[in-house]
Amino acid sequence: LQLDYWDKVLNICQASYTILRTWTIHDMCTGDTGSHTQIIKVLDKTPPVMTPPNEHDIKIGATQKVGYQDCTANVMLPWIQNTDDCSTTNNITFYAWTTLPNGTIVIVNTINAQGQFVFNLPVGYTYTFIYTAIDNCGNKSELSIDVDVEDTVPPVVICETLHTVALTDSITYVFAES
Image (cartoon, rainbow, N blue to C red; front, side, top):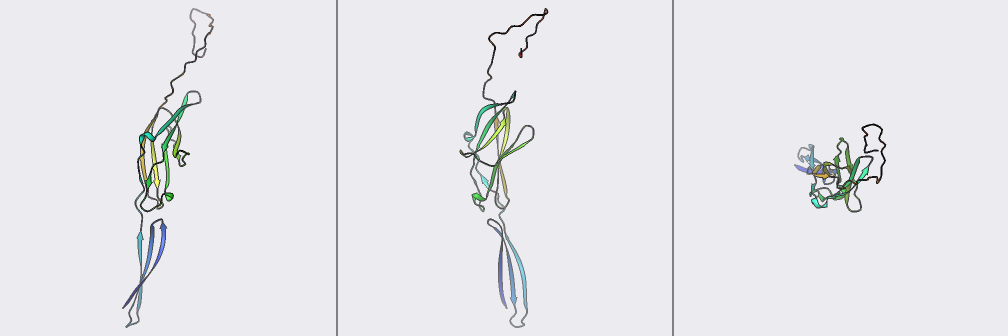
């Protein structure tokens, strides 16, 4: 008997592949030949690993007025280290996201020159930010952190120095808008 095999390798994703191994057996005495194809899968099933950010690296910018009574602030989350046993760093999709109080999901997948994900968010809420990393084979990991976004700018009182009110009846109301 003579036994032999031949491999055909099919790439699935980085560091994952399928081997189609065709076995052939030949009986030298009878001249009979048989073959069988074996499927061997080598798969990456491990998601990337992320290192949590240092809380001192999370920055909240100055409050900005939006409209009549609303304020927002920039929240700057640092880029964090992510590694994967099978995918190179440039083959890992990496982004951060959060949900606004009204249910809208905000995704940021670009970083600024300082290496930060920048979110402009309404103040007065605690946000759960989720870092997401997906490797070349589709394995996903998430890391979440909570950040309080507060209005840190005290109100400024603006008063007129002189305001004249005419008395028309026994009661006169002076409203803040007057």
